[in-house]
Length: 441
Image (spheres, rainbow, N blue to C red):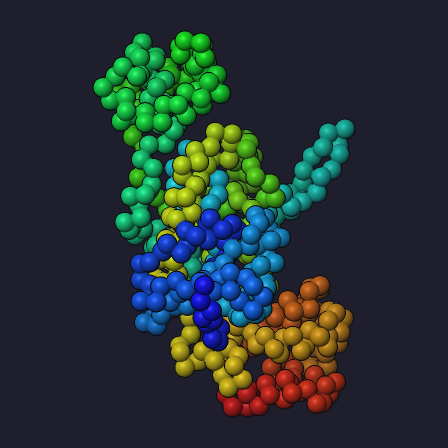
């Protein structure tokens, strides 16, 4: 692999949970510059891939992709935090797979998250010997203009990659077989058998598992007959054809476990009526973006319905579709997060845009004032209010937040903050250099 690091700050840090999801990102080529994706290893040995894409802003956007190597909130947040502190990014993004809500969407569809939260966050209490879960939802939402832009991308999703979607879900094939057995026909003897049920072996195993078909002679069980009867009442002509690919803008819930529970979406819908997806990382990235004041965009492809009847043929396509739709969105929304090339870096090699913090300065402040008590004392000395300093345990995250506050109209301006810190660190080259930079702008 080549070692071609992107200088300055990035436009987008794109995190995947697993390597196969990351590999699908590297197949996205529409709008890419002639260099394509360039894989390399960074100074700590992490595999990364950098690319530049055409965008609606008129300037190319830079995207760095990597993967966390493990599923779950902790791994995704730690990986994103590591990379964004190494090289600031104007946007955090995530593609990959999720479970989708049956009857509301189809396998392979993509969901853009307009709300993200951890559905298993809360308190477990015992009442009359029965355990009850009391949820404590902390919702994260993209700004309305971002959601509007998502809706525009959803309406225009296209590309040759759509041809890679499996044509017939196993559930469609199951319904077709049930219909034929209910009509006293032998599916394998019908002329359209190979077209309507190309995955006969997998379908038959699922019908056995559902106990809709007897294993001995491939006849319908009583439950199978009832299911087929209801389906025929609903669709008297023929089994309805699978729906075309769609992208959706809807809530995505995050949990700590892989879900195989057909009742999970009805439960979630009691508190989040429009929820369409479940996965294991989005809320953690949203929380990180909230602290850093960096926008977070999550697009996930539906690979299953969160129950025991999975159709693994859709996994690769779901990861591919989410990557394609996400990068299309990022290209068409660069005006929401990108700055001009002339503003991209200042003389100290740090981003000058207010949405990206100077890493070296943040590290110096976090080292000197690692505790909220210390940070609050400095902030008050600089003329700020104690209530403006949150109790954030990670020093770098705390100072990311405070620096953003100082840059966005707080009474404590960046200049006043650094001048006050110089009283404690009069010989700090980092503080002196950043004061010099502020004087030049």
